[in-house]
Image (cartoon, rainbow over all chains, first blue to last red; front, side, top):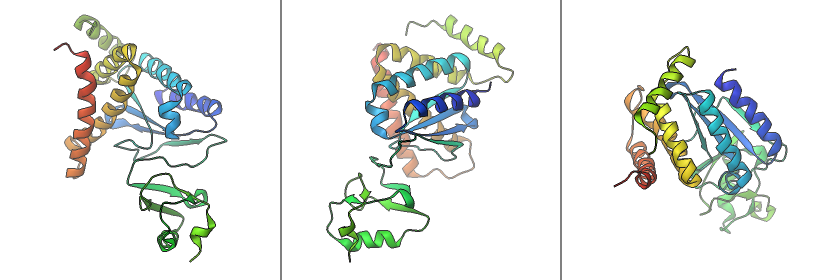
Length: 156
Length: 94
C-alpha cells in the first residue's frame, strides 16, 4: 500500500465517523508532504475526537512512511491547497464558512444568505449578479459567516 | 530534546532501508521533533505541524519553482516562521 492509498483509506473511514466533515487531500510530491484539509474549522479546532484522530493518524503515518510528512490544515490556513487530489464529503456536511481569509470560493448551489450586517441590498444584488457556476465572495459584509437565505436581502 | 543524534541517525538509516526511493532526512527530523512536542503539548504540536508544512510549500516555490515570489508570500512565510519559532523556543533550552 502506498502512502497515498493509506491516507485515502483512512479518510474514507474518517468521513463515515464524522459525517459533518469535508476533507480535501493533496499530495505535494516536490516536498514529499501530504496535506489533509478539514472542514468545518470548528471540528478542526474544537472537537477532541477529531484531534485524537489527527494525532493517531500522524503517529501511524510517520511510522509507516518515514521520510514523508503529513500536515493537517483547515480553511484559514495561510497557504491553502492548490492541486487537490481528492475531495470527500460527509453525508451531513453543510457549507458554513468561518474562515478568516479575505476571499472564499463557494459553490453557487450551496450558497444562501441567512443574515448580513449590511442593509444595502444593492451590495447583495451586485454579489449575486457576479454569480456564474461558482462565485468569489469577498468579505464585503465585514464578517466571515455568510448564509444566503434571507430573501428580503434580495429585494431590490 | 531527549533524542540522541545516534537514535536519529538510526531512524534515518532504517527509513532508507525500508524505502526503495530514498526520502528526505529533513522530513524525518521534522516529524520526530513534532512527535516529541506532541508528547508535551498537543496544541503546540498542531501549530508546528500545520505551519511547518505550509512553510515548506512556500520554500519550494521560493527556492526551486520557476515562479515569482511576491511580497505577500514573503509576509506569509514570516508569519508562519514566527509561529514555528514561538513553539520551538519553548522546547529548546536557553
